[in-house]
Image 1 (cartoon, one colour):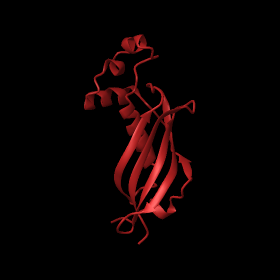
Image 2 (cartoon, helix red, strand yellow):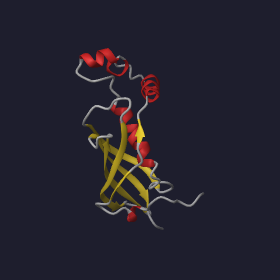
Image 3 (cartoon, one colour):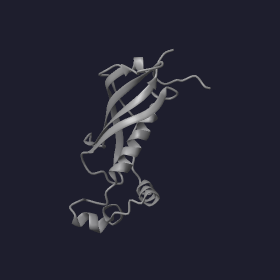
Image 4 (cartoon, helix red, strand yellow):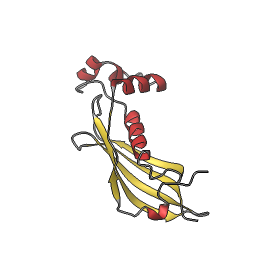
Length: 150
């Protein structure tokens, strides 16, 4: 096994925050996601229909926004080799996301505690997904099981 390079739960200080790299949502992202996972809603597929519903273009599903944000969070490598389990998350969509929007995530540690057994802990964060205008478009609060120091 390769030595973990991520953070141990004891190193994740309550109140600490970081911003991930950014990623632009592409037409390919939208088409692939909606087709792979059956999100065949007209709001995601038909520009004209989305506009009649008050949107400026086809919407990006909140589930895709969440998936991109979780990927950006994991790419920080803070959990590389130390993340043991994704236990729970609350997700709230705040604003529409469209193809061409550039997303990044502000991750803030809210709570940490030792797990009931083993050298591991439970870490809760609030992850705010920001668009290119620094508007919060989605918030998710994951709870993760993270390796601790032996």
